[in-house]
Amino acid sequence: MEKTEEFVIKNGILKRYNGAGGGVTVPDGVSRIGKRAFFCCIELESVTLPSGVTKIGDEAFSSCLKLKSVRLPDSVTEIGSRAFQYCGQLKSINIPAHLKRLGEGAFWGCVKLKEAILPEGVAAVKDMTFCGCGELERVVIPQSVRRIGEHAFACCEKLRKLRVPDGVREIGDNAFSLCRGLADENGFVVVSGVLREYVGPGGDVKIPDFVQAIGNGAFWGCGSMESVCIPESVTEIGTGAFCNCKNLTGVFVPGSVENIGFMAFCGCDSLKYVTVAEGVKMIDGLAFEDCAELESVCIPESVTYIGSNTVIDNYSVHDCSFDGCPKVLLHVKKGSYAEGWAWESRLRFSTK
Image (tube, rainbow, N blue to C red; front, side, top):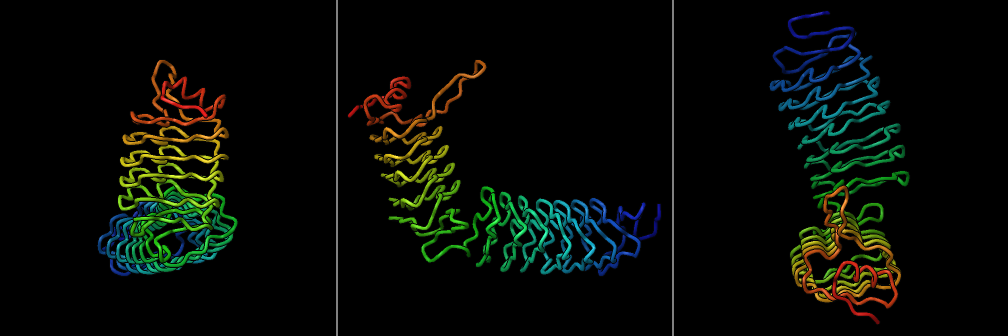
């Protein structure tokens, strides 16, 4: 092990920096920055890494509160999880052209970071990667990315333009939560055809007809919304999409929607009337849980699944789509799945 007053190095891995901070140049011969090597170096202001460094370990520079700039060589192919987490003064960083892996939460809480250009070869923007980067204005996501993780860009309030490549197959929950700068003039944050969040004034809300799905929690807790118009372009209503919308009084779900998601309208205290159009196939568990004022729900013949209370391994699982709806009357087709389900669930229903 090579040990100096400032650097602890073993087999080319910088294990720990013990210096006074300020501007630091890591010596030649180092190939990896180890886990937590600079963790919580409060006085560190800038870092230059030598050519040949290939990996920056997990939390390597985490909580370096005065770190303003980092110069990374093109040899770096991996930046570990939370590598620069909570570097609150970091305004810019050159992300190497040969980078292949960017760990979870790599820049989480870098509140002054303004730009991030990811190179081709990066396959995923993982969970929390840029979460809380409140000053982030520009991000370039390469064609190689296939997944954007949960909360990846959450709370990036100044992010105004973002192009998501066509090759992205998955976008995690709350990936763009509180990205108010991405909202259109009516308050809709739509990414890749999915309505991710609504930050508008409420009242009578008309969802744009180019929206293909309403994402998980998109309208969660929107107490100012009184009515919503869901266009026929929408094919899915996600988990908790309208949960706790306390002033929503009625809903029409068009037949283009295949699935009304888990807890989709849970806790909508003022909801009284719901019409589900022919074409809808599933009403998932707890979809209308605790809608205490719900009086009337029309369920079409096309519905072939409604969440039910069950017993698994002697444990009761409360998954009924209308749990906590004491006033509800279901209007169903005679001989339909919904009629049989209502009978088994001991809920009031009428046939037509």
